[in-house]
Amino acid sequence: MTHGNSTPAGKTVLISGASIAGPSLALWLHRYGFTPTVVERAPELRPGGYKVDIRGTAIEVCARMGILDDVRAHSTDMAGGSYVDDSGRTIGELPAEIFGGRVEGDDEIMRGDLARILYEHTRDDVEYLFGDSIAALDEDADGVLVTFESGLRRRFDLVVGADGMHSNTRRLIFGEEKRFKRYLGAYISIFTAPNHLGLKQWETYHALPGKLTCVYSSAGESDAKNLFVFGAPEELPYHHRDITAQKRLLTETFAGDGWEIPRLLGHAADADDFYFDSISLIEMDRWSTGRVVLLGDAAHCASPASGQGTGLALIGAYTLAGELAAAGGDHTVAYERYERAMRPGVEMNQKIAEGFAKEMTVGSKWKIALRMFMVRTLPRTPWKNLIAKKIRDDIQRAANAIPLGDYAAHAAARV
Ligand SMILES: Cc1cc2nc3c(=O)[nH]c(=O)nc-3n(C[C@H](O)[C@H](O)[C@H](O)COP(=O)(O)OP(=O)(O)OC[C@H]3O[C@@H](n4cnc5c(N)ncnc54)[C@H](O)[C@@H]3O)c2cc1C
Image 1 (cartoon, rainbow, N blue to C red):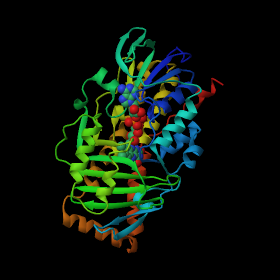
Image 2: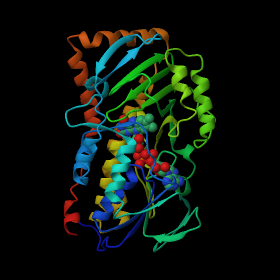
Image 3: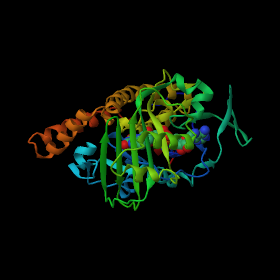
Image 4: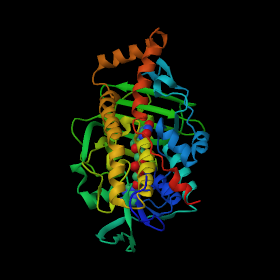
């Protein structure tokens, strides 16, 4: 279906953020005849990160993008995971299908690998501006005059904020983050460190009241990732770019804890990919105003607890670009259709995140004992397949909640 009489030819689109949503959108927009530019605050593509699931409809999006073989070649190939006690003794082991709730065809990849794959598939066709950020947006009838922090000023037809949970574009256009952020009661930190436990495609967990520590190493990685989650009733006072304060908070929270925790924490100081953030949702009544629209975590962060943020970013980019192409570049029509297509699935995934956020840490010693009992006995129980199926079915429903539109004709029309 085509809306409007204009054509995408040459329409310029500035995209803020070069992680998952931004480069995915750029790939599709270029395919449909738009001229995308991506601005990224970091001086270069941000490496590292953590493993992210790609499931359900997002797998089909990767196939249509032509990146699925590359994604599969970088699969984490996790075999499973175990829980250990204070002395490092294994309490129970679970295979990857139960741990990840995955089905045949689902995949898991390091966020940094996926970002690099997307960048490599777009860099010859898309202009990337690294080390810069939008300072001001002035919209008029013909477009948006963008002033960058570097002092550069350029006009674009459309602007897309794909700059994550702490979106700068959202702040400039819609207002302060706190109006849209809903804290789910926990914090998460992850960073790269030497693999001194010698893990191979394996994750090892240690639970304490209100806290969870995990170390994992995925296929092709010689290092490990050290991951910490802890509950906090109120949000902690620090700035999201103040890494020193974040490292201090993490160290104070886990000070005096047993197992390998002191050694794992010791590597935080030198980690150059240190990540620390609250587990929070971004909830907005609308994702666009005028010529500016939000995409991915910037619009609707579902938090790491959903396990679907990457999928939503990929599907959102596919849908936004497709609707812009279908509307002949008419953003008023396209933004509305994009939001209508995405919103029910986004809300379903955010609801899942609320549930999982509560489960990520366990509040008391006896509840941990109960969970460890389940971990120990589950692999031997006759109903383990039923439980695994229930987990998989719930996750798959959410991963397939957003139907994909068919926009192929708009790309084919350009060939
Ligand atoms: C520990 C952890 C585990 C996760 N696990 C999963 C999982 O298993 N499955 C899953 O699907 N998702 C998972 N996620 C969520 C997933 O990483 C995000 O949902 C996904 O990366 C969103 O992509 P995005 O491109 O919208 O935003 P982001 O990945 O946050 O990228 C935003 C980009 O914008 C850039 N930027 C920021 N400010 C500016 C600015 N002012 N100007 C220009 N650029 C800017 C940033 O540097 C970054 O490159 C996890 C997240 C975390 C933290």
